[in-house]
Length: 490
Ligand code: GBH
Image (cartoon, rainbow, N blue to C red; front, side, top):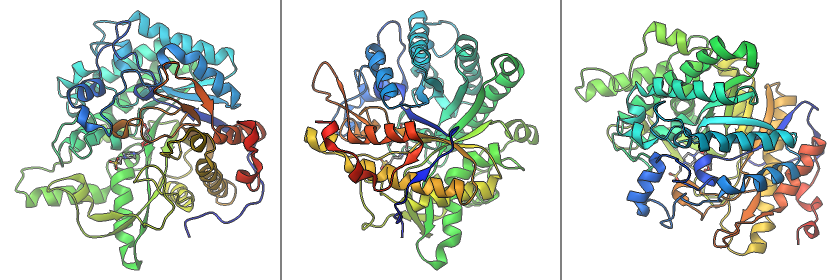
């Protein structure tokens, strides 16, 4: 079964951290205010409103650029130890490079960080959550390996400017997701369509960029600032569809998680062997002179290896993998050699890809420990979407409470039964926001936002009260859904 079946009370250690996450493009709005430059998401959705479900974009979103005090207030209401947010690169550097530093942008994040610290909340900063300066996309974006150097300059500015106040840094959010913006798969920005090539070039640059930021911190900032630098990778759990599909499931996880985790967290470094072999073999069949997967020198392998103080993991759901091929020729999907499906009977959410499959969480955490040893893991995202249209249905979000309860139970087993070193948990997401191509139709928030009301008030959902109790007590109560009185809300 993929559901969690027990319901006893569970306790987390006192020093276990609880937090909540967001991302700049999804909440800030103010897309062209106070000197902010254009990002690839601004550009793509202004050119192609039809890419999103309801033709809307993040121009205004939840207006957190002006309402960040409201955001901090609710992080505090939920008793969270930290707030994971991202900095918009083009808000700080409108041209992408150091030719222009936007003082108003720098000030905005100073204000946000100060507001958090004044409320006893640790800032955890994601440097890049998908909103590349469009100026850099004109130079090829992540497909151009020189962009790694631009990222280092940007990281340098962030460490220098905020590093005395920020102790938690995440270089990149989900490179395996944003690199799909170069494969044409899902119209993720920049919407470049070079499947089988673009995603690998992007990944190569992203790994170098990450390593640059880590080494820079190590050499220049760590001794004084004493913070930690990590990377956030996302992975579904892949379970074999039948007894005969075990290799396919292993390949799937090596292609999607190992792609970035192996170079950084494994002992030997580099892309997973199965990935190097399969992409090379397919490339040869296509009569190409060299593999579509770029090759690292031994020096680069050593340079990237070990460049993380912690492993940030975003996890939401489980997929089946079975033997076979799918996807365009060529594409990373096809190279992986696995057919990915889900079971229609698994409990659903508001997102077609997200099924409620909590036991996969424990399996994934164990897989990571087996593959990479006792790396310190922090869950940087985990959450549930719905599409309810009535406000009551949205505020009384039992589906989300159940999801959190079951996933926390499985994570607890991974930590306290299996011994996986998870030191913190971050719920996705603080408030309803711009859910990329699904725009404002899929809601992941712990707080409700009415996007047609100009005041964009944040209202507590039941799940925010539930998680707020857990963050305060470090206890997952038995039968959580039933315990939360709806009357608190209405
Ligand atoms: C995270 O990605 C993101 O970090 C976050 O910004 C986002 O809001 C959150 O998840 C919820 O989605 O639409 O069928 O093409 C999670 C991994 C990768 C899952 C892309 C959805 C697209 C599926 N995501 N994937 S589809």
